[in-house]
Image (tube, rainbow, N blue to C red; front, side, top):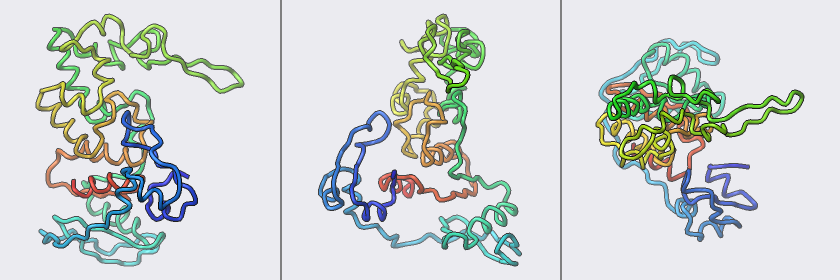
Amino acid sequence: MVEHDPDVIKVADHIVDVGPHAGKRGGTIMFEGSFDGLLHSGTLTGQYMTQDAVIKKEVRTATGFLPIVNAHANNLHHVNVNIPAGVLTVVTGVAGSGKSSLIHHAFLQQNPDAIVINQSAVGTSTRSNPATYTGIMDDVRKVFASANQVSASLFSFNSEGACENCQGAGVVYTDLAFLDGIKIPCEICQGRRFKETVLAYTVDGKSIADVLDMTVREASGFFQQKEIQKKLKALVDVGLEYLSLGQPLSTLSGGECQRIKLASELHKKGSIYVMDEPTTGLHMSDIELLLAL
């Protein structure tokens, strides 16, 4: 069982703690044993399990109200609720009590401009990645085009710059008829997705493929352009500094999907955010980061 809920960890017979952090900084077995052993292990999970939850001492004052009028959906019958504006509101209750009906049906119908961040995947295509989803890739292409005095479309593996052998996929799929198909790295571009002529163009010694291999943190130290920095900072702020810019979105977890959606919307002002179970799939340290944000 893969679980992030502290209460589930407490009742486990045996615990395996993986870390120490996420992405390239993870992949190590940090602890294996009992719950008491975890508490004294010194791992990030063990540290958070021994900390008391901080209760908010002061709450903010609402700036107004967002009314839900005559909500009638599923088990809701003519319900009226005022959601305070300018503060963080939690809608809670047992499963099936009407939370989703109240918000997803009634509230969103009356507030269609609200930004919804839920557990659904942000994309299943191997051609979508953090750089394309957040718009960073558009700015990066312009930087490469300007530095090399060529067309920006060359630096897209979905367009003119794509490797002709794999059409920019980086892999070649082989159909084995009655067996599952297989995919192997493209022997022409070696999985880098671009034509060799495109990879010859560089910015400060880095090709476009090198940039896509960078983590968000590495890229924030490489690019100085204001627009790129702003979008990279949003990813860092939601705790995704370990993702590589070219990592397929189809490989992200539910919690990572939520945070990359949030990062893509952070630049907007005065918006209503609806977060559906935002801490599902998140480690306790991630939850602390999300609450602070």
